[in-house]
Length: 383
Image 1 (spheres, rainbow, N blue to C red):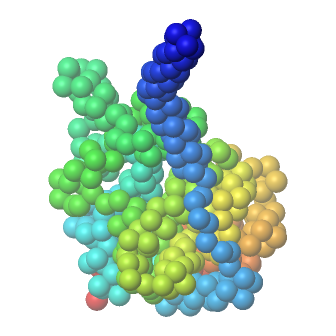
Image 2 (cartoon, helix red, strand yellow):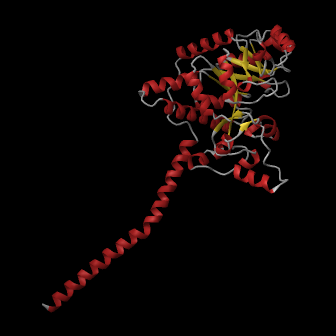
Image 3 (cartoon, one colour):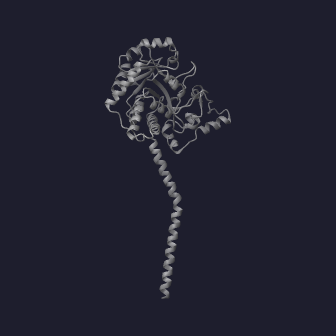
């Protein structure tokens, strides 16, 4: 009996020790499991951020035709496309702010062009950038109207440059890899979203996010906006238009509280349908089409030395546009000489010539047959 009792006590003690050990093992493993879950969550967010989320349905052929007709009628009714959302006072240009946009829209203009680029933390804002989303010294000083924070001339400048490249959130930082395909954020001389939104552009105008532009488009359903992302690589263009798609959806979703899913989707697709997207190279146009089936595509007609070989002649450019659903082309005023104009105007493509601020130059280009003049200031000189 005594032996049985001892055996029972030993078994009980063994069970208790095993249970305690199990509890201890589980406790010690919990932090590791939490870290693993956080890593999995981060990977999931990164994966989602690198591609279009909840991509809306594409446009049918009839819907594309409808937007193409609305686009053409708007072009026919307008004298100008307003460059960088409008210049002010005859001197301030490349403002890209909702402040002049509101004023110029109220004056009756319905065609706008806007420079859109990434911040260091992967958000889209209205700001001009150089090739590959680089913010040049001129972009900082002349266009944003801010001190250039990347000179090493002072400790304050160095601190500002370092601060401007700090990731602001998990979601934003996950976009950095996709928005900086060709160089790091430091090389691109960007600032973060919060810093940018605290600027007064050229000391006068509200710094504006891309989402604010989307909100304005959602409210004003008769306007079209040409999105200028500069020159980008294939992968960078995909990241860029994925962000355009995602931020448009996010803004429309916020504006659609209380609406049905179908009503929200209709607003989203209408805003996307009135964005004139595209790029400067065949590679960029191919990237755009991989992201989403935008109905309005614009192609930049580059100078002879920069134009791709297969687009060498104007007729080749026209054929490419006809075969690839391009609605319009934009061209620099210096490239749009009489000979080039005569060749390009034989097509049904709508033509946008940038950037013209002199009335005599405007008359010359109109005589060549341009459909729309891109301007900073001429809108303000009309009687």
